[in-house]
Length: 287
Ligand SMILES: C[C@@](CO)(OP(=O)(O)O)[C@H](O)COP(=O)(O)OP(=O)(O)OC[C@H]1O[C@@H](n2ccc(N)nc2=O)[C@H](O)[C@@H]1O
Ligand SMILES: Nc1ncnc2c1ncn2[C@@H]1O[C@H](COP(=O)(O)OP(=O)(O)O)[C@@H](O)[C@H]1O
Image 1 (cartoon, rainbow, N blue to C red):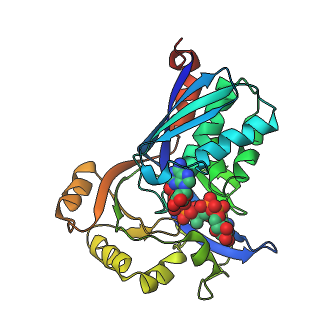
Image 2: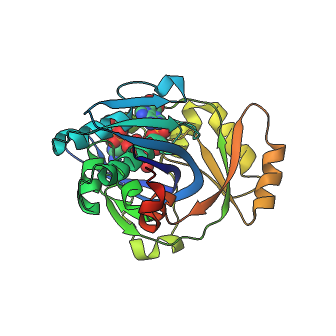
């Protein structure tokens, strides 16, 4: 039996602008994605029958429509694969909070099964398949911090600094689809030149809306900004502050009001899953 164990990292949107809306209702974005050194862990065991078995440590996600199962099914049908897989997801990332964990789990599944089932898809093909599962999946497939355009699928590698982040989950559920439909959402940001984004003023366009609709998120943003430059990630509700050192981020975490959850993590410009797959494919495969 062959088993592959791989991480699925979280992401932050360092900024998020909307520059327009497509005919199919999806929005044209500009954003910069950076990964965090906090991740879910997935294990993939090859089965000789075509079954896809799935087990998740979070009961609410232990379902047949989990993005991990959908990613495995997509590959299986695309290539008429006769083998199967048992997937165990150790869910460590908060979900539904703009950290992209579901998309990252899906991307890790595509990368892992491409290897385990020997499918020979290249990176472009896997990113394209990933896009069918969600707008955030391609960046996790490619594995580089990136300036994103289109709906998040046009990706250009960037190398932002890697501060220590204090990420706060204020415990509020926000529906991505509902926020994207909101009439007050700013959809007319002027396109930024991607070479100079760090010299330009940026924001997360969802932030004013989320502040208004979810006072608890506004409270957390107002608390954290006393310690560090602070921003919402994705459509929230998670938010982050960027610190110069782990100690400073931890000191702020120690003072954080008890009603929120928080963690300290480092920004990463390379995804650990891609590094791991590149480095030692055979080390990870145990007979
Ligand atoms: C906003 C972002 C920023 O990274 O992240 P999250 O807050 O979800 O992490 C993403 O664009 C979200 O990506 P993802 O979570 O994969 O979205 P999807 O499942 O593809 O889409 C969910 C819904 O959001 C809307 N949507 C999403 C992306 C986009 N560019 N335009 C949209 O209008 C659509 O209504 C869609 O039905
Ligand atoms: N493996 C998964 N991990 C997390 N969420 C998942 C997963 N599969 C499906 N989902 C669904 O996707 C939603 C978005 O999850 P996630 O990607 O973690 O957050 P976000 O899109 O807000 O960054 C969850 O609320 C959940 O219903």
